[in-house]
Image 1: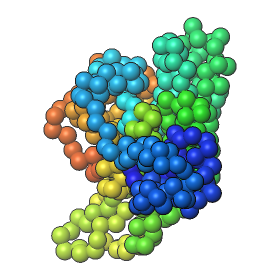
Image 2: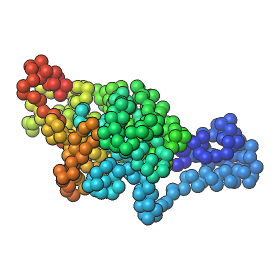
Image 3: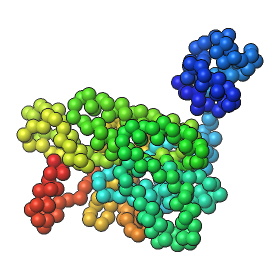
Image 4: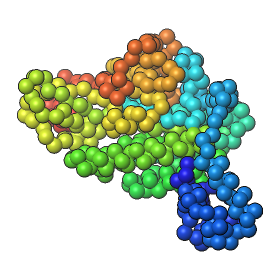
Amino acid sequence: MSFRRLSKLPLDQEIKERIARSPLKTVKDVLSLSPLQVMTLLHMSADECKAFMDKLFDVCVPQHVTAFDLSEEEKNGSYWLGNHALDTMLHGGLHAGSITEFAGPSGVGKTQWCLYIAILSVLAKKKSNCNITVMYIDTETAFRPERIVEIINNKYPEHTTEIKEYLSRIYLYQPKTVSSLSEILESLEVIAVEKDVGMLIVDSIASLARKEIPATSSYSNIARTNQLASWAAKLKCIAQQLNICVVVTNQVTSRFAPEEPFITEEIQAVDVEDGELHPGWSDKTFSHHVTPALGNTWTHCVNTRFILQYTDSKSRQLIIAKSPVAPFATFSYTIGEGGIIIEEHDSFYSYSGSDPGLHKIKVQQVNPHLPCTQLLCFHHVMI
């Protein structure tokens, strides 16, 4: 807390202007000085300086909350997913103040879940007379307003006359580079307060990092990990301070492991989304399986992880792979004109799950009747 920027604190405008003209940038900068030094730098009286520094001390003191207060706060900050069994298992759906991740292969419906959640958020809060908005960061240019119109028309026909209002409460940002995404996240706190944001969606958190910082060496691996850790820290801070629900999507990677015990090379990985082959590939016999991308460090940054996978060509499956409140569970779903449709009676749960960072994800199988050229293209992407 001592590293919070003074410009972000709720201070009087006159004091902010004095701070802007001084070399003081963070809370620590002020509290490292004596009261006399602060009075000199900011041209304050003794009483003004005492009140100012007392406020900064309060910022640094860890805030506590009772379990009851937290329970009541979560009830008001929950976002239901529209299925009773799933929402009950999650104790109220998606929770404000936390990061929820949807990880899965291309085409499994990650963006469809994001659009569906955006609609549910504005609809639910409208019914409860809360004028919250949704901030939607689209790094893959996959957002389509006409899809939102289609879902509302088919699933919520009683709200068709209010579609314009719902669309106006979804604020879209489409960064094209890592730096532009970082700039948006840096200004998140101001944007969230100004626009009364209750739901933040990032689709996808992996896309730009994997394109601009490919894992071709140990140095680039460290750079990518540091960048992701910076984004995660910013998202967690915003989620907790402003009580916002954060939803992100993640891609997948194929992990290759040697089948023979005598192979000593380090296990390598291939990015399924971009077909990127990591160095150190050996012409040996390997087995592979698909897991969520971005590595183990990122896995620990998210509070809840949903894995999306294929069960057949039409049906898909949502897996609760990591959650502080729910057991390991699976739910079947399909995607239609009305958005996500969760099967009511096709679910399973167990209190003995798997490692959420290494869970093997099912992808679409190659059609044996495809022409040879198409099979070769598919093989190239997987390898």
